[in-house]
Image (cartoon, rainbow, N blue to C red; front, side):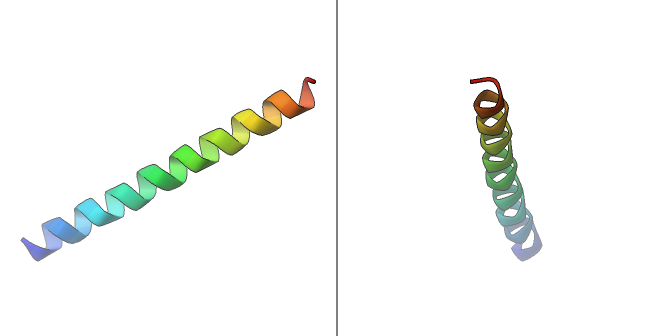
Length: 34
């Protein structure tokens, strides 16, 4: 159960980080083409 909870926390962190990276990538892409 504890391991499962840890796994969910890790998954949340990874998903948040990947969303941030996607936003940064889109921002840079738009910035280059303006």
